[in-house]
Length: 68
Image (cartoon, rainbow, N blue to C red; front, side):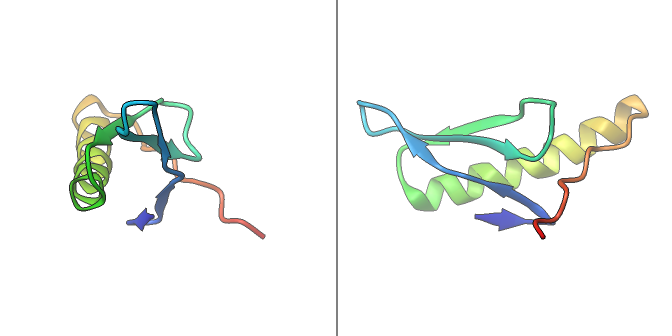
């Protein structure tokens, strides 16, 4: 799953909840959902919120390093 250059590798727990973190950053931005459609929306929201929050606090958002 990718959005605005960020990606996520999805996992699920024993209860069937899908979860992940934005890959390639050290800031630990996580998100979760009960189905794939909602997970996509949660991922986009997490990325947008991360970028917005970084801007608000005057920090450059970490950009993932492209795979070679």
